[in-house]
Length: 616
Image (cartoon, rainbow, N blue to C red; front, top):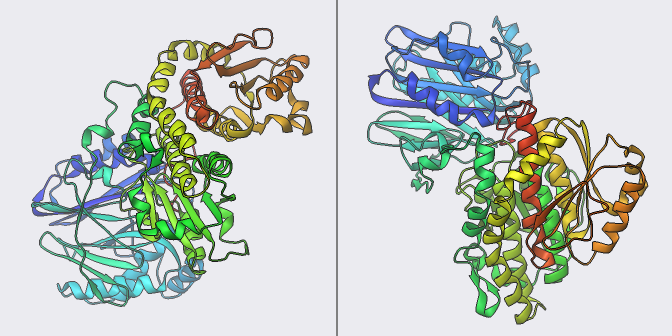
């Protein structure tokens, strides 16, 4: 996780204010501690503090002049959140300072070796090892030639096992940042006055939209006038910049109290952006340009493996129902953290689809790399252009949902569902789906944004329900078929932002254990649209009611037959069964948000969590 930002400018500047603004945009990546370092004429100025950026800010001298700045927001792995474990870390003489995102797997053996050479460590982290390694390889070379510094970093990287994004500075090189990447995101921003480094393009938007993404096992020398990218074997690489399409306005709250609230209210727009230009309604077709290069291969695919983690995993489960029922394609959904360790038999008729909001999810990325060794066709469904998964896969589809800042994913989840509907059309029409069915799905999909806005109009009532129930400490979420994964998603969102214990189950599985929990103090939220399994779900609710369980029901507008069972009813507009998850999930996102707020939590930054999971 962790967030890295830095820059090197042509002239000395008082840049700590810019650093803080950028690091605040990266706090979603980790907020256990924060730190900055600046190369000044007198040496390196450095401050770091446990807690959020607001804890560090009073200790900073914002008048410090320098040309090189690096900063870090931490999500703790090795070593508890504390001042000494915050980044930057430094060697014995404090001349070298580093920030790190990732995990050094062999740090214990390296630390033991370095201690034997006289190095003394000041933190409990794995990251500090790297600063001492660079110091060791640099030795007594005090010349001003960058090649000495570069070679020391390169040799140090060759000793490291694990995932990393590093930024390294040295007081003897006042206009140089050396950066390196392996399985953790890092990009370089270009402008006339400075060059920037960051874990995420959102930190760069107020400075530049021109970015270059580093690939794994690459190193870059960043100066005001030079950018040299090379492999660890010192083979130089030429790479063109890309333009980030997001605007800085997209990462502002713009009148909302929290980013999570803003992003839920952007869900209709997220669906519009996902389907824009991709539907040919009159023909019942989906046009996915990112898959055109592999269209013929996809026609022969007989089995699709979807891999993802967390919320993206649940969108994959919805996709499984869509693709199997309407495209006639067998689908398996595997956790990204487990797939790479399974000995699953693959053949040339299989394909892998990786789903990730950030495009940097370490477990999912690791599974892709493992599966690629078999020669399997790999596809990506990601929101971030230029991300590692987008570059690692053979082809794919972008969400176009825009930046999502809140740690709990909402608008990207719903855009993933929209893309799965498009993919179902695309693959279904290649196979046995009729033109009429394709036209029905396509036309109904175009209506989803308007129907979502109808649900938003009832947000005041949903807020009232949340106020009534936020003091309960346990919830059961139930759904069937297309809405079984939505029950899982609803439970996860409530856990993430309100810290209420919640469990998601298939309604039919309730009798196989969870029913034992139900009493008047254990409410259930049941997803029951008027669909093919509606009568079954009603029977499940009867069982809840017989145990004195309170029930909040989400059902289709006009359905008045649940008054005797329901304590509260939340209505969604009518749509075809396949698309109901795009509607049923919004009330659950709103409920989770309001309950988290009523319980007094920072819903944008839940404890112990970070947005982009870039370590395994």
